[in-house]
Image (cartoon, rainbow over all chains, first blue to last red; front, side):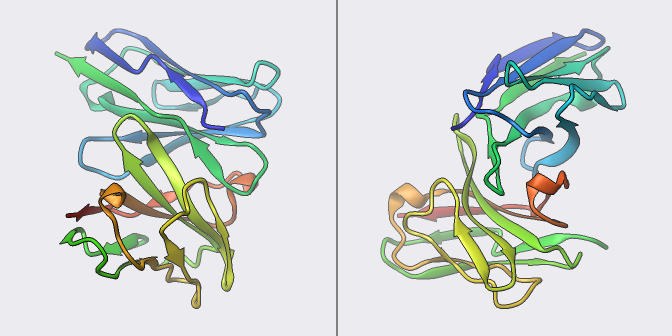
Length: 109
Length: 115
């Protein structure tokens, strides 16, 4: 089951904060976050494991609520370089990642 | 340099003409995977391979074939391409399966157009 990401798109000014949510209807073992810049391949950001463990990357952090089957990505004091499409990939226990439809983030100066 | 390579990067073909997209990784990764990316649908897995000679269907396998004869190579075969297979294709690899909490490394992508 493909997880649902929200919002589908967001536009920010440099320095503003954003939250991207990823919600699944199936139990999750872990959540992986990737960022894809326009015309490029997705690049790994972080993995969130069971137990609500938070992992951070630069000024990007995330959380994982396994009971609610949700993960959220927090972008603090956004920079121009954060622009791109963010994907959550969910491990639903079947030797594969199931990705959400993506959230397009645009950061303006 | 550690990388995943795909060839060709761009391909325009006609309906029914068999084609192969190659994927190779130089990181000695066990797990390899093919995805297609379509607007509004995100990344959808076509096939994956846990190791040499071990392959399995992903979420959208219809119309595709794969093989894993060597650890480094994982070609994607379209025996009779159709216009609905027009898409952006990514190959990815990781040390082991996602359940081992490994990051996936993606190739640069292959943009396929089937007329």
